[in-house]
Length: 564
Figure 1: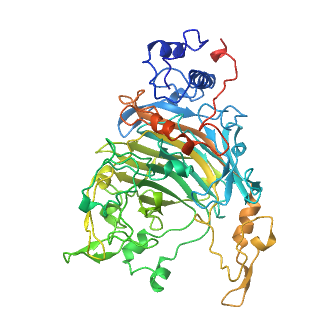
Figure 2: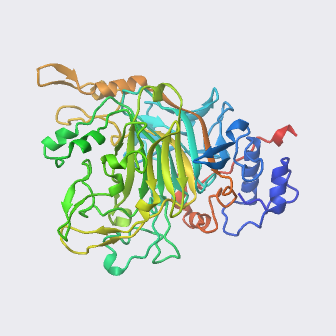
Figure 3: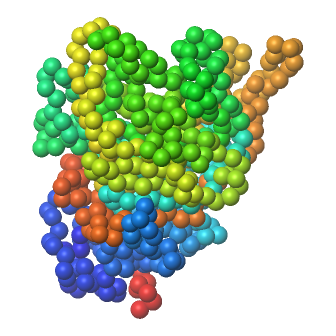
């Protein structure tokens, strides 16, 4: 936050604010904040104990001293952000909080059944509660648009962002471990895109690509799908995504052998079958990148199947996907991308997304693995962590209770990759992507979507509706092969019975190496990768429906900081 433009008469009771105002460089003319807005943000942050002294201006005063420094991989790190949620009664409606903003309204980015309701995020008994329920929501803009679930999303977009660090969430997952249907998340996105605001992310998400491919290499790089590209701008930019927590509860075990027997997937070795074995509940961790391997490229695996062998144009035998992430025992343990403290499997159900930004099909890459969970992760608090180091030698490493789950090394993204197509034409090279280097922000949410843990429903036999209040949605009696009657929608009845369910967060903390932490790594608008001018020029793409501005002004409570 720029403070140099604060008037000298501003009643700043916190010494750190006065010092920052007197010593900071002038506010750039491209910033979107008015003086009143900046004063409000700073004073509100001060009121919650947030501004102490750079680079600790985002550190919660309630964070214990013992948690303000830690050694990570032998390197001294300092706490640069924390929210302990110790103050009961906090609310997160737009304009209520200096750090987080709650969203409202229907969302379609993942075919959600829920609408967002910012009142379902609140603090109580020293934790942040994110509550999902089965109450109907009706659109204020269209009374025929009704969602049968409500849940919250809060995000620090354009308030708190950072570049690199060690991120830790202490949380308890919502609901019961063996009942599917909920989708709790903790993730990050680059500030050039605002999560769920699809006009802001169109042709922006999840690009981490800075090349202008030659004309004869454009098909391999899906040229034309990146708005801020290195052919038209000084550098290629985007809003990359890192998913730290995407938890899928339930009691289903995936039968990969059945897919082979049915001809859906090609045969796999015993080693592959053992290593990709997946059962609910689990949590998936991912780094998403664009452009990805094109969908019709022979190198891209079939969605829902493990990577298979194929014969390349030169006659050599190769394997789809990326060697480092293949389900091989050599890719586990020291020197491999998969940890061995948990049962961790390649996420063969998610190699990336397919969508049509600007009418042109884009296929992204997802470097994703799933870690099997137990009842303890829903009954007790656990630590969910990601270590993000940008740069050519960087990585993103995911851990649970400080035990490694999965690592995405920079070398696997930056390496150029050959791309070929079944028609034998337009073979080329997918140029390297990067470990995210954009300023990124934090997101916490709960969704309900048929894309995530909802059982298959046979529409020829059942009314495949999702409303908990209708018996025809929660009951569909069928007969199994042995002649036994059963309710194939029992799982939905169980989901409905446990609502409201609460995703509880004890704290969120971010650390950075002591030598790195500075105002340049703790900003949403860094000098080398600015975002403010882009957001201002495309303001309508970041603005909630019915609102005049992307973010409302945050107003402090009016009491001096520190009781002065």
